[in-house]
Image 1 (spheres, rainbow, N blue to C red):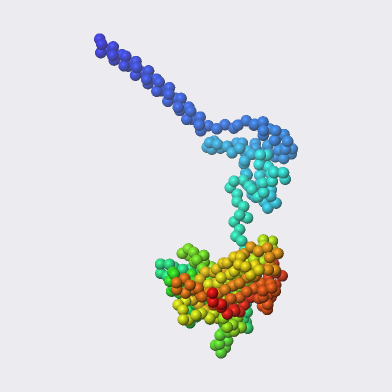
Image 2: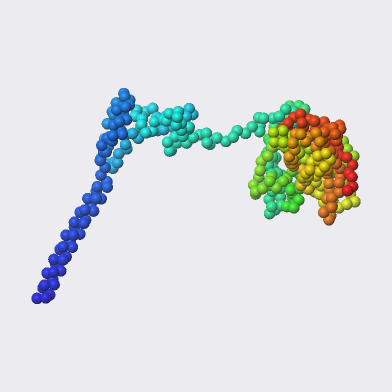
Length: 421
């Protein structure tokens, strides 16, 4: 009897469980079907208000919405009428517009008034072409007066192989003696004046395209003390070379940064035809900003220096000193260039000087050569300033700087004899 009773109880419990599972399955099935059933939403009060205030244009919107409310039975969703056919684009008059084929404009996306201007912003999915414009390259159109021509080149230094890769790209607006000129470029790595590399000759053009590459072998220690020299020549019928201009490009750390080539352009400069003075010459620029009370000195290069041959020359540098009533104020130095009689620097220094102090201030530029044991020996010196301290070209340079504020005034100056400390 006990076994029969157990069987009856088990059957009753099993039937109850089966009924429970069946009920749960039905509920889940109904919810599952409900998730794929979408019904049209009734008109909201906001849309009713906007429809009542839009006039004749709303009649077109209502007609358009009626045609768009119907949907195929196979599509499980419906696009709201206010977003149907929307194609917003940004305009330059700082307004938003839609495609003309859409007769209904959603009130929530209407253009703002002048009090809340959005600029050139648009709906997500559009783009502003102004953000993708690159600055216009004016290097081939803006040439200064009296320009002898412009040269484009690239520089890259490979530290592993210790090779300097120079790319000669092009030249523009060269002042050749005739239209049927033949042009070539010689490349020197100063201070070595004897060895050079030469480009191919370009004929019958004053704006040649070179696209040539050259390699100089130079160590990592000395590359930043070298200067690239580009000399542009015209070759006449007698095969004589006439110099049209030259470019001096110091190889500084910032120009060689990264293992990639950097493209530069420089205007050609005329070679100085004046013979060097007894102790050499120094070229530099002066500028004074009366608004910032700033005196700027740009040390460019020197030539014809009389270095001491009996001393083991390490390098040559320039010391720039600001004086006031012959009293020392501040001193700055250029980087040292490997012992060369024609070093190139292209370094800028600034000094704070009030306009009231310029009548008693002066600048002293001294060229020194370093020797072993960290000792320096003066090679030559030049002083520029007001009438109290200078005469001649040095005084003219100072007066021209004052008459042309915020402009760089460039001149050559002969060095005076050194005075031993």
